[in-house]
Amino acid sequence: MNSTTTTDLKLANIEQAARVIDPVFRNSPQFVDEQLCAALGRRTIVKVETANPIRSFKGRGACFLMRGLDPKLKVVCASAGNFGQAVAYAGRSRGIGVEVFVPTDVNPDKVARMKALGATVSIIGADFDAAKQHARRKAAEDKRCVFVEDGEDPSISEGAGTIGIELLLAGSIDTIVLPVGDGALITGVATWVKEHSRQTKIIGVCATGSPAMAQSWRAGKAISTGAATTFADGIAVSAPVARSVERMRALVDDMVLVDDAQLLDAMRLASSTLGLVLEPAGAAGLAAIQAHSLPGDVLATVLTGSNIHPQLLAKLFG
Image 1 (cartoon, helix red, strand yellow):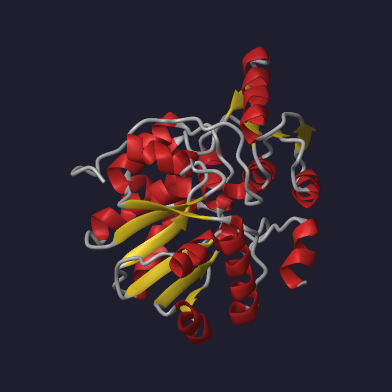
Image 2 (tube, rainbow, N blue to C red):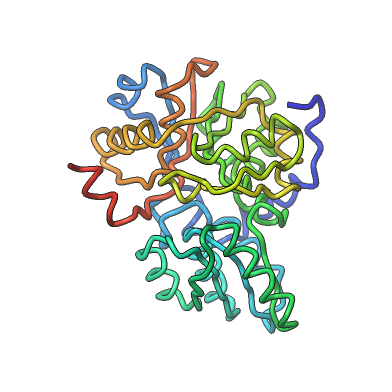
């Protein structure tokens, strides 16, 4: 981490987001489960971001973003599924049309949920980054559309930063471990935590088959890695957002990797101890705590999503 924690993210905006985003996404459960702690060998606070209408944390940032958009415009974005659901949910509440571009290997349940929330879904592109290019092109060609990018727009990170406010209500935390996709979650949370609990370490988690954000953080610049090879679609990023990498360099203390087998083990652990079915990205923080010797006596992680692919359910409980 750099010696400065100055970025374009604003503490005042995170405070505002905590007041104005849809209450259904705020004050999510956070607690210590003794069975989980025994299995991890660490005192670990879990924050459950799956008990809401889109089953992920993404609603916080999408709600805060959409408050600042002209309702006459149509929003175009790319998503592996959760961000698209969040934008669709927020767009519906504000009367804003939404089109989501998704890759061809998208979780069909996520597509169904986006459509149920009123979004138009265009399935195109071999992976998430290809879908993003199609979305960007659509917005450039149609002036009635505005392209929004998870990890780029500050308000998305600031909305996610409200999780940091709530986590610190648990008391002193030595290390917060967070899944890293486009980086909105970790940069938003870290912005708040580094100001209000400076001793707390912020550690990001990427999939071994999708190490682009970890490699970019270490290099200090966005590095594309080609196709992502992980079943954790929520963190399967191969072309990082440059602005997000810049924020992470200022705010994040370390990055670690977990493989798909470790993610699956963590999903099973969440099921057996917490009674929660998590998607792979949603269990990435638990996987990192299991797999790595992370600093501190009291850790916290965010269970970020539970929109699991139907094919994974059999593997999870088989």
